[in-house]
Image (cartoon, rainbow, N blue to C red; front, side, top):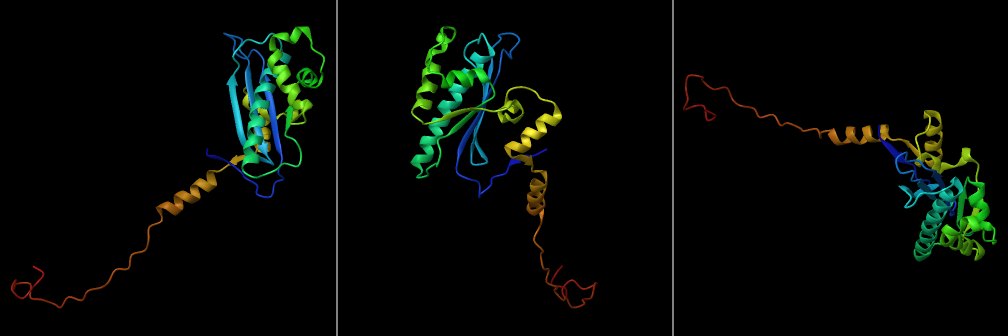
Length: 207
């Protein structure tokens, strides 16, 4: 099956990132997985799914590491958009389905149990404080990045795939194949050959 991403021309100009983490997904190393997908309007323009560099001791820690990585990507995309001469009406939005990670990004109070990821905490908080991004909570059912973190049931997978904008492009591919193999019509000219004596080779110029 061949899939394509539908690009909508009339979508509003906004930058939104959905970020998720699968805590201790690897049963051998217990390394968590970070995944995020960024939309410009309703069109996906950047996505990633990769293992984290260190083992996280809680789901909140794994989610916040993912939040910091997604925030860095979103800020870079925002700067790229501005260099292209485009301007967003609102700051980029980052959506996370973990309440703890969302709370730590907004709460200026330092927690001793999160000091080992102090750099990620200060990085995200500073951007939120300056108004360069906003971090909001999103329900798990609306978390589009969930598609990139782990295997999902078929129905759930298809719903998220549709929301992201990925659709079956088999019909489009078949159309291009049919167009590619269509041969041009060749017009054959008819040449009249006068009757010749089959026993005479001299009178037949075609022999």
